[in-house]
Image (cartoon, rainbow, N blue to C red):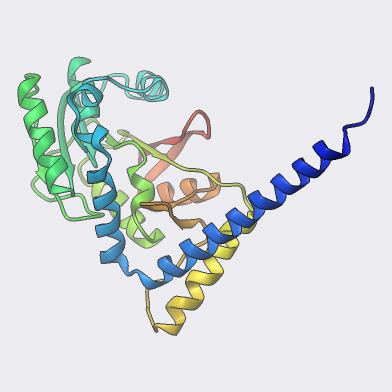
Length: 262
């Protein structure tokens, strides 16, 4: 087989160089802004992005049912659950799907517009469940005790800071019976990645210059929303500290884990 033409080699080399340049610019941009934003601004940015994405409030999306990986996890680990609490309920997709499976559902959502939309769609679809408007990163009071819990698709990674995420898990644990499952979903990252290290270093330097007490963690990123990308060890550690034993972990087709209340 002949070797590649020099023009093809030159193009491919240039393309790889451009990809690295764009990744570097993206890391610098994310690092600077992550360093400039405090928790309250990160919440506002994330909420504004979700409102800007029209699908999260659309009836078609919210009545489309569970994703395949959600169906698999619920079918395997939520057997026997008669009631489920849905955190970060969004427009109500998970709540409607679980209700159709015969489960009683309640939920909470920190974005007021999405919470109101969820109430509308639940009513239109005959779902008997509450949607409480909550504070960001918190499970509200006034909830009951449930057989299981789901944190809405990808929502767990939008909570800045390990300590706040663990506190959130502990609050959820208070509303679950012993042995109850909880499903989390999230973006994943390899153990070492130069782009995450750049973001971490730049954002950390900016916050130190600002004398900001809120720390940036390796894996934090801004991509329209605040996102923390997890390693397997991080998810397992946070579940255990929050009062759960990890029973399942998968990185495809979307990162998710199931914990069991201890």
